[in-house]
Image (cartoon, rainbow, N blue to C red; front, side, top):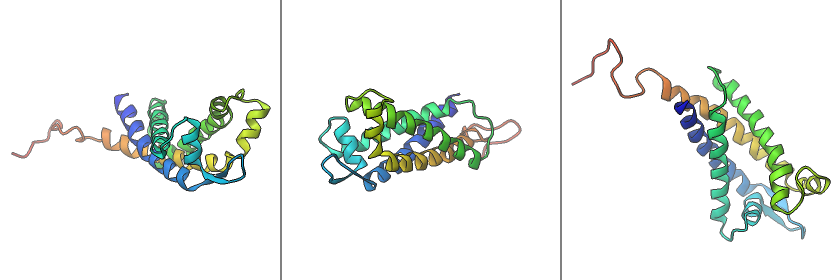
Length: 165
C-alpha cells in the first residue's frame, strides 16, 4: 500500500504541474467580460494575491487526488488502461469541483441552478485540464509503481544474486 500511495503522490505532482501549466494558459471570461486565466481565477477563488498561491493550490490539489488515486484497488493494469482509469477518475473530480467546490467557495449552494450558471464559464478549460491531469496521473502512477515494485528496486540484493564489491 505504501508503494501505491508514493506512486500516487509522485504521479500527482507531475500531473499537477501539467494541470497548473494548462490552467495558466487556458482562458475564461470573468464577470466583467474580460478574459482571465484559470490560474488567476483559482487565485481569486482562494482569496490569495499572488499567482504563486494559485500554482500551489493546483499542485497540492493534484497531489491529494494522486495519493487518493494510489490507494484505489488497482491491480496490474497496463499503462494505457491505468491512464484511462486516471482520466475517468479526473472526470469525476471535474464534476465534483466544478459543480460542488467552486460554487461553495463563491457562496452558492453546490449542485444548484446558480452553481450550474457559474460553472458555464469555467467548464471547458476545467474539463480539458482535468482530463489531461487524469491521463498523466494514471500513466505516471503505473510507471512509478512499476519502478518501485520491480525486483531489485529496493537496493537490496535479491535472493540468489550477489552484490558487487
